[in-house]
Image (cartoon, rainbow, N blue to C red):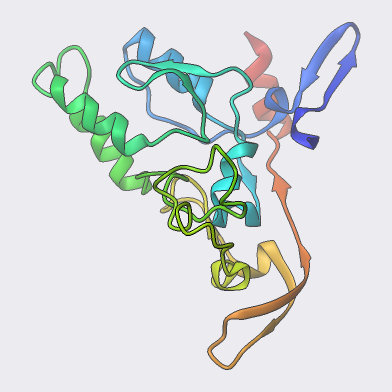
Length: 203
């Protein structure tokens, strides 16, 4: 996939992950939590695939992350942030160790819930398609036009809404305004600006 391309410059290998803009997460004074967030935070990709579970496949990470309570094979294809939050409620009274209330408030503010786990699968026969996908058990392909109507949402719904005309083009709609045909689909990867990239790699 294009997101896995690497380029060698002066004997240093650069990947898209080294150059892309990644959403900012709050700082938590806890090494384990910080490391999990660092490894799981994806590049910001604007894509019509975000209307579907398959959008999670673009986010990686390349190497699965270990998340206490969820296991050692966590990727966006199987990550349910709401489940992490529910597991952390057991430590709610240990606010001095982990600021649970701040974390919960951040997730609510950003609109982070189940991420891709409750979105329809383009291919419901994919073994990785989650049981929580609305068409997993029926094995019926989704109405792609209906899903794309109104645009798509990334994993942080309140901050990541991709308007319809940003991800699909030259559409034909029915009387109710639902897309029945589109001539083009568009995906974009957001890169760091020159100043951001310099400061990021300065250390």
